[in-house]
Amino acid sequence: MATLDEVARTVLRERYLRQDEAGTVIETPDELFRRVADAVAAAEDDDVEGTADRFYDALSALEFLPNSPTLMNAGTDLHQLAACFVLPIEDSLVSIFETLKRTALIHQSGGGTGFSFSKIRPVGDVVAKTGGVASGPVSFMRIFDVATEQIKQGGRRRGANMGVLDASHPDVRAFVTAKHEADAFRNFNLSVATDAAFWDAVESGEPYDLVNPRTGETVDRVDADAILDLIAELAWATGDPGLLFLDEINTHNPTPALGRIEATNPCGEVPLLPYEACILGSVNLGEMTDGDKIDREKLARTVRLGVRFLDDALDVSTFPVADIERAVSRTRKVGVGVMGFHDMLVDIGVAYDSDEAVAVADEVMQLVSETAWETSRRLAEERGPFPVWSESVFDDPVRNATTTTIAPTGTISMIAGATAGIEPIYNVVYEKQVLGGLEMVNDRFVEIAKARGFYDEDLLTDLKDRTSIQDVDAIPADVKRLFQTAHDVPPERHVAVQAAFQHHVDNAVSKTVNLPSDASVDDVRTVFLAARDQGLKGITVFRSGARPEQVLGDDPLK
Ligand code: ADP
Image (tube, rainbow, N blue to C red):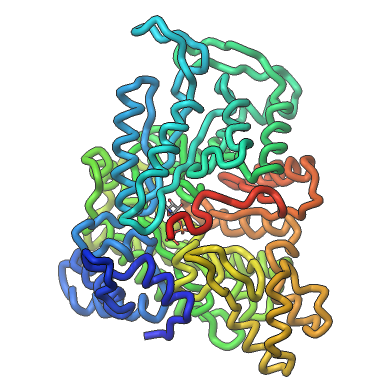
């Protein structure tokens, strides 16, 4: 088993290791990896034990980790293993409150939920049954927010949501500004869903129709450009909303016969049909190098294991309601991705902001994607294709409608001691505001500092309050280049890395594009347009000094 650092051990103890009723931890990290490996391998027909051992080896070596609900729940009574869900909301109280109930059950099991609120009639519209006046999607979103606040996931963390509204909904302005007030919608990320009609109107300057979803009538004609400006302004001030590019998402919808995709899970990396769920797992790229080279063979081997693990996990997972069970078993979506991308760049000596980093992203994710699909084809030969395969876009039988996703890996990267997802580092040393404060130290930096003779405790203390090490004289220039922080990397380079990954990812990519505090609203707009031009499925920006991120942020519980 790999050595777990202090942060990993704290996170595991506080959130993952099994506890008895008195709250005493009754499992070691090693036992956790064994529990998860055994529970998931139970789906295998032959060689259950051999497969369990291989799963255990990869998990305990921190080469591959599944999403948090799998680590928490596999082999326990609550056997729900997926992190990502999308639920439908129709324009009726019955539908809204039915979905609210299901949301509560999903949050309780550790999953996150996304919804499109676009079908809900706008503020001021008629309510025939009562002769009253409708209160609109934002007011119903508030109910979901309050409910989420109350449900702590097995006492371990609070739930998270993605709220989506079409740019053409009459209440779009209220939606865009919903998080402006401090502390409003703490448990939501927001995304405005855009399509070709919206972007055409931005470009042509022609009036853009706002349409009442209940009647299909145009209730207003507005300047799409002004809406885009408002979105950029709020994203500048608060980090929300982001954008979804629904056309791009649906161009890549593997099962268009089952419907159009309108929403994603909380962090945006998995666009799903209503009731679908997805189990994610991430390969730790920092473990996929050999000296200063990428170990392609090890990477491919780990991806093969990861796809098999997630396909097994689908079989042994329970789901909170029958509609979800049905939707999941029809398409069998899984998402293998990566974490520790920046660690890998450090190992192979590539700066995050360079063209070479984009080439590495492209090379790595192409290999991941090709290997994942080859594995899914093999699994289809062994176990049959996903049940609605014949209605899908695939010519060859495959076991899963999607195989790849880039998750944020907010917590599992802390267990793996890896940089999160495909993000650049926050700093080489800093205090992370979770679980009462954790000291995050970049091992690679410390190792290099010692080897190159510039290590000293005072230096580390001094670096702690910074968000960049670029102007620290004691650190050699070539080392500084390798440890560029999220603040050092220019926004267009963030977008370029995201795009390189997206081009080989079936689902989507979780990524925050950081902007310096003196960036303008127009800079945000420029990032939005670049994201659209480069074929992204969604985009989220965060300007340094804007309100701290709240959803999935820091220490919601303890
Ligand atoms: P982890 O590292 O815990 O496995 P990620 O940060 O990779 O999770 O997030 C993956 C997905 O898991 C998110 O997009 C969301 O769907 C779900 N998720 C993460 N954190 C939470 C949370 N606190 N509550 C509910 N769902 C969550």
